[in-house]
Image 1 (cartoon, helix red, strand yellow):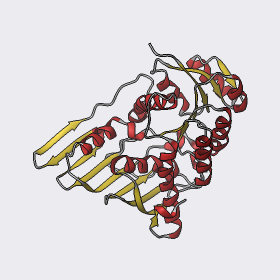
Image 2 (cartoon, helix red, strand yellow):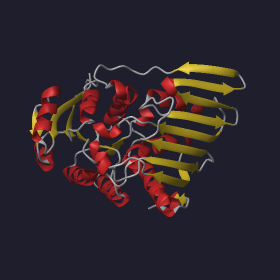
Image 3 (cartoon, one colour):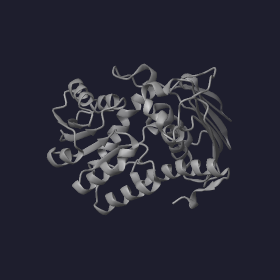
Image 4 (cartoon, one colour):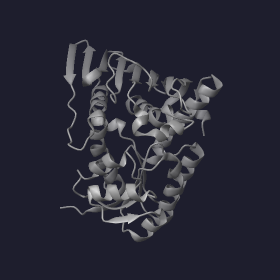
Length: 344
């Protein structure tokens, strides 16, 4: 039987309730401490999950708690300071996306962790959703041949800001929060991107950033992928938080539509696959497909930070996803397509 690993949680907002619940599904993962400046919120999370040690200071927790890693679930602007402090303490890091709001901060975080030999990973869970894993399996199995065209679609009118009102105060909103996931799926399915063109819109009242974005990405391998995202669209098949995917290849196509209906069309005919979503009692019904992905993602990350395996969610690799976010904003600001090689 393997050893247990002590994990410290930093941040006790909406997402922490589900992230901690997902950790509880992994027997060797032990949440022993939690940190937040909001004492009532922290106490509520600690009581809910029976977490014994509470801290209001990150340096204090890093100094006094015997941790195998920390999981940062706080707001993005806090990430650089916490990651750098953890690096100085020699504590392995798991950090929620986006890694940082500024690319220069993200590079500094990656470089410092690397220089001090501190494991650093980003909790990118969309690629761990059951439908996305199935799409990747089909692509790798050659079901559609060589992909050349795709569409990734996440348009909804679900009240996202009701659960996460702080998003409405961000000057960079839907691309930084949602687009980072969708761009990572492009990399997951098709490899690295060479160019991106983006247009954004601000439709809702009372927000500071964009709530609609449409992008065209072209990968080094020649796939042209349209990525659409909106939090203000009335659509017939609004299935928040499902991501819809359509891919065309040289030998066929696949379509992941509402309610996880996956259809593959190729020379052998038409095949329909119903993707089953793992069920957990703690998962919020509105977020089930996303919440269920936290468990395999956490297992993957725990194996990586403890040196037992590797992960594609290494922070240095995730920098390429973050570069796409910044390239998208640059394209939207200038009205021009952006070469990823120019983003550093």
